[in-house]
Amino acid sequence: MSSKKFTVAVVGATGAVGQEMLKTLAERNFPVGKVTALASSGSVGREVSFGEDEVLKVQDLDKYDFKGTDICLSSAGAKISEAFAPRAAAAGCVVIDNTSHFRMDPDIPLVVPEVNPAAIAQYKKKMIIANPNCSTIQMLVALKPLHDAAKIKRIVVSTYQAVSGAGREAMDELFTQTRAVYVNDQMTKEVFHKQIAFNVIPQIDVFMDDGSTKEEWKMVVETKKILDPKIKVTATAVRVPVFIGHAESVNVEFEGDMSAAKARELLKKAKGVSVVDHKHEDGFVTPAECAGEDSVFVSRIREDSTVDNGLNLWIVSDNLRKGAALNAVQIAEILAKDYL
Image (cartoon, rainbow, N blue to C red):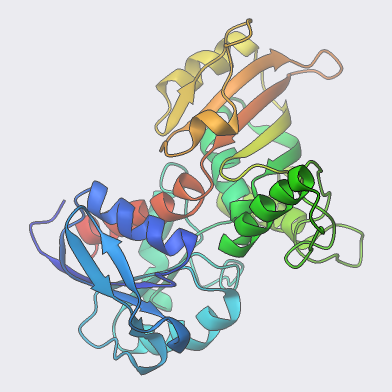
């Protein structure tokens, strides 16, 4: 890491991902000279933690002058990013944006550091780097070493996504609905159209013309942009009553030879991956065990006998960390070390 100190802003600092970004910057000893917490005017004056000792007072994003700020980590919603990110970029600040707004812009790199770190170099075109969707990130961290070895033809993925992916209000809704079931209170639905407590919802984001949801579409197009445009991807994204941690059941078909044993060995050596794969009750990882962890965990590695060179994988990761904050901070680390 460079000995230079960087001025960093975190947009959406009062949200679940924004707070995780501040925490991750501190934990990984990012070379921060000064850090500023930014949010909407309604959050101005609130206090957020940075590391063990430092407390930051939230400032107004709309009034903040980005001149002199080196890097901005942003997780405040697509419309907010659309409005502020070009302004920050014009002031010379590199924006690492966690929203969906810039991901498919051909002039903006979409980056998972373990998968396509060289793409970061393209940031100079618009001074913006996009963080992929949380479910895409964890899947591609696990699939990249396998794709390098045997070329993936097709991916069929079903996701089991925690409510924290929909923000703090969604976490509160799961909590209040769960309590309502036990104390026989009225069930209120504000974030999700259907009850989320003791239920699963096969819809994340809006429906599109072909019947897919936008979350499913994101996994398809982001995989093609980051890993390989030739890969065929089909996804079903499901919200489950879990607070933190996305799980995925992934079926992969390869062009070349790929056995479960070979996949296991490749994944054990892969950066950012932890393999926990034993044929007993404690031999796999669940969302409850991955919360707070940086790794993408891969379990249940087994061959699919219905196709040539097919594998099934169970992939689990903390969606607030590797799925959002950690990925953004890792991009910032490469940016600071190699480009700024």
